[in-house]
Length: 403
Image (cartoon, rainbow, N blue to C red; front, top):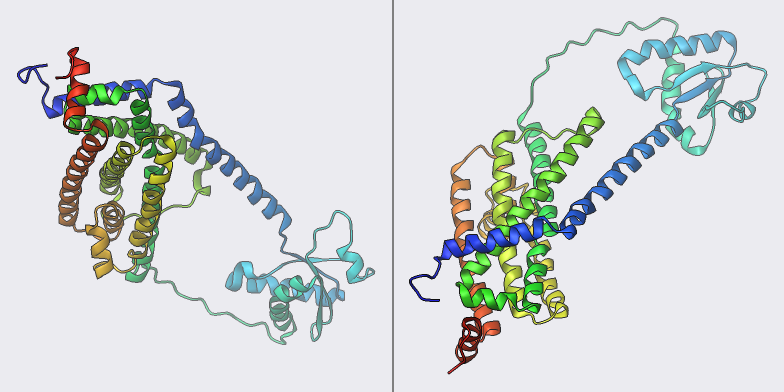
């Protein structure tokens, strides 16, 4: 192939990206890969719903009152007066027959009493398990004191002056959103970045990568593979997001609601997509470099383990810096390439400033280019064996014999 007909870097990268994208997207393996994370989510949601229902049915706040008729009436009336002031901390009281002992009342079939109150208003007795006694002793004493008062207390009306939020509450809420964003970003990157490594190892075993490297620049091969895998990742994320949206519609208000980030949800989600792309390209370029240096699948697994562990440490670094924005540790996490997407996404949830994100995205893009160039250089030196071996590969592709 002459220099005049050789593709440019970006044109060659586009050809590789289109080839890999179509090859992976329409494969059966990718279909089952998409289904993989959905099963744990669906099973987890079903298990959580069933567990919550069982817990609600197993937990009861019903307490039986086995006192004299006048004392029972006074206890129930006192509970009704205290309920608007105290609320759910009080037990639900139900009158029972005084002919049965407290132990027999608790053993009645079809009943669901957690405890029984007997005795008198001056000396009430709570019968039940030790946990139930410890839990209901205080509320029962309060109700009995209210019931035995000679004069019914008139509780004053408490005025309300609500505010939308406070600085402390707003900061706490935004930290929750920042943590959720970082965790989702980390899980997606670790789940999807491994496809880059497996694809490169497979093509090395089939000698396809040598043909590509002899025809187009190695930088274009690496860049094209990264872009293709990023596109495939966005397809997977879109499918999972659609499934998550369907689950959210079914669950409704049962799902926890995250507070709104400082930049608002539209801009926060847009930055999340950009930071995912940058983080994926950075991590993927490292995996491509590892795949280029490894000769077998065993070597790939051995060499990729330190990078995976280092990525965990990077995530912990960014997560620990959430509560101290502007500190040296948080600034370092925002500057270090591998932790920068996590730290900057957390900053998007906590700060309204936009200019740091422009600087961070530019810096991350520069690091992607550097990582790709270094990875391609290492691949040429170790695999293509630049020099005589490299010329031999090109001559085999071109159909000529080496000199």
